[in-house]
Image (cartoon, rainbow, N blue to C red; front, side):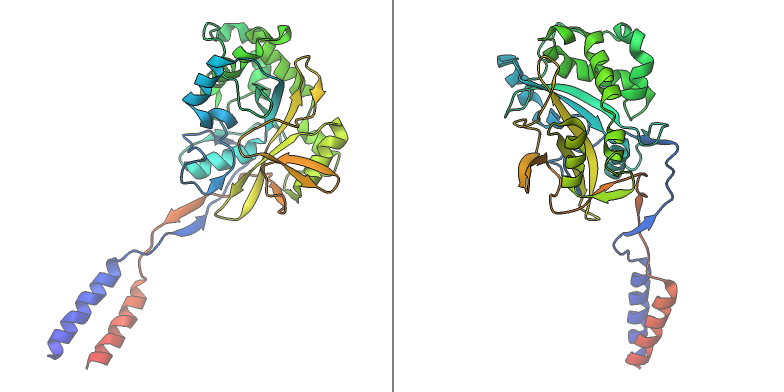
Length: 325
């Protein structure tokens, strides 16, 4: 009888040695100076810990339906000029796919262009307005160096031409309705002009908002309104695993005559006008929480499986042997 008990305990111990527990997080080192990446990313409707906007295009979530809608009506009301904070972009992509790499700009506090998006008020799109206006990278040769600096694909140089092609086909072909943007070179050159005129890091810095700080959405909005005199649209990504909202994109709006206007009335994903004392803020950020403006890509949360330590198995075995005697 005693030998049977001992055999049972031995089998139990072997089982405990091999059993795996749930993954634990381990912090790895991160380096700001080199690169980060773009995506094989999930869309926001996927089962992701991140809530907010997809990075490749906010309105890409409409997929083919947006293309079908744009065929019916190519008119639009405003141009949305979007700048993105690369650190947040790269963090999101890396959390979605740890094997991806992402190229951060060499300069610190450097916002990059995401796009210029012709948009109907209170609607999404239009998109893909002229299939005959093919993308020709040679037309961008006069400004290619500046585009690589200010309008890069964070996935790296190898994919930058893909980004420009995508932006032109989806949005540039709709912007062609106005003479100032009616060809490929004009469209991208206008983006560079706005990027050099509206330097978001300086606008925020003037109100003492710097990378590696936490600020309210109201403070960020007030900084932009103070500098520009117009209402922007402020976008965050929410990291549900750690309960942190990260500043992701800032969008400012222009009329068809390329004059800066309020972004009131634009519809972009889950951003909504939120009433606050003194006015309204257009945002998808958590209005009652601080927003983190990161200076570094947060360390990767690596998942590792672990086994029950052998010393604990030995102690458990001793106890069971004593208990069954």
